[in-house]
Image 1: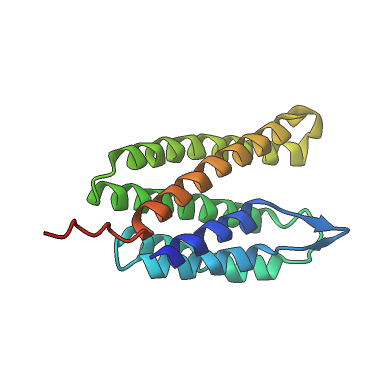
Image 2: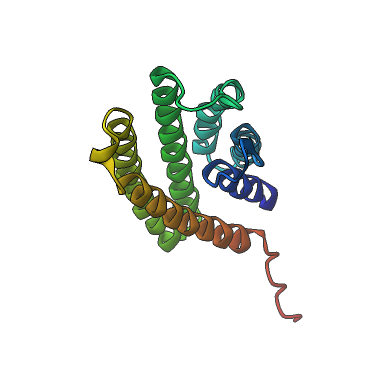
Length: 180
């Protein structure tokens, strides 16, 4: 089980944190999506919601492969498809985390995932709208794109912390009872 959580953890890091050396992306998104697909597939045996996240993440692999190395801006249809699929993947993934935690009587973790899911939805929608506005009128969007990006990074750190806590909680062996 720990392997699935770890794959999703590192997949999200690769997808959401872009590090470029010149025009070269050191950690391309398709690698992150592949890690998420494998991790969600592994955890699918525990909660079916992970299989939905896996199925939504699968088309993101060829889409990000196609867009890898292409100079921005990408065609609007590609950007919209990518944003919608990413939104749906995160929605399904956090929904699976909620279900997983509720089924194992960890309501605090489920509540955190529920809160992060709502915040992610708000940030993702606002960031998408600001990016689209910046395409046509860069002065209108101003620093809002950077603000949305910073807020999404803070939220990513919180989500990663939650995944780490869940992995540690459910990957530790149960203590042995006292000998009688």
